[in-house]
Image: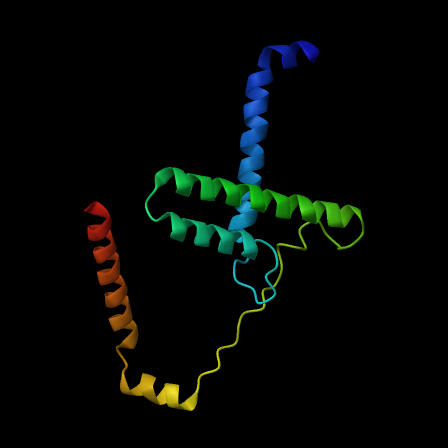
Length: 142
């Protein structure tokens, strides 16, 4: 066994690292990312979105934001295991695999009337956002 480890230590290390990455990837993929109470991976996702928005188009900055998010997600997973070992939660994944509490949308009556009068409002906003992005790209190219 020791001889096998001596000859294949690098392959074992890469395999273990890749396996841990895949486990974290799937845990994050299936976990909720919207929650009123800001539980689980929600703060990590919000922080990464803010950092990427600030970065605009700088590739190294975006890579750093994604890497920081990966580390933040790992801390959430390890925090869940730690809380489980201390008896603070019933399962190791209870702090990030849960039923999310989604925000309830309360629409003002006057606002609802405005939406009824302007049914294409969402399309118009999407068009404005697209034009804004085009202007930002032109601005950054100059």
